[in-house]
Length: 325
Image (cartoon, rainbow, N blue to C red; front, side, top):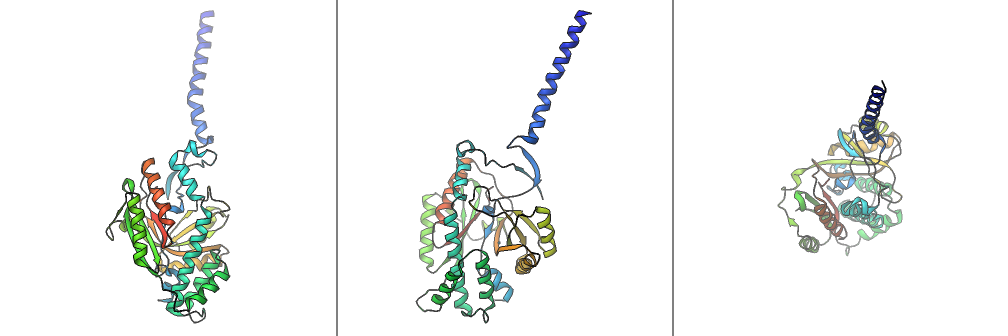
């Protein structure tokens, strides 16, 4: 009897250990940081391709006739850059360059306004494209005084007009770059871009050989703290096709929000509808949206991010977009 009791206790202990061994990992998958869960796919806006007027004056000129399921990881903001790895640390540094982004944003709208004034005049009443562009610039946080000064200078003959162009580039690890250029000196822009590509051992691609991996769509950026279901309902009411939450992790003073995707011809209609529904629209533009993001090694990711940083620092480069995860 004593032997049977010992055997019974042993079995209980063994069963208990088995339950702990199996049960705890399952339970921890629901509560531990870094667990993978199945949620709607929310990607960083760095993977979205932007291209205003004509494309660049896109939204304004176009309207006048003249930017599902998936597996995502929970936030790793509590992990130090060293623990995250070189690629993650590089992403954190890149996203933290808020001053550069602000300067780039102001410069982009300045060039767009200059083009718009030279094409249709400096009177917003007589130039509806300019009127809409000024509203977009204000929503994007560009100082009104800046726009007024640019309009005045654009009327003078010594201010050159800006032209747009697009370069396609093969990145490391099989990804592609789409580089939007807005410049008053095409030769300078081409030379500067090629210098960066040579330093980073990247190769210029033939037109169309990279762009086919992207979709050309409209993108309305909405800043709001409302939940995804509420914004999705508003976007569908506006006639949009899809949306993604903006990844603000690691960005100082960044507001939460969503990028709402739509057909190019519906861009401004969707933007206006979102405003009418009480949402803050910070931008409306044409973009290059990757069809299928590609995973690369950590070394390739760091190399690609280094190249993107160098390209974005060029004055003539308006935006650099890629299809890297």
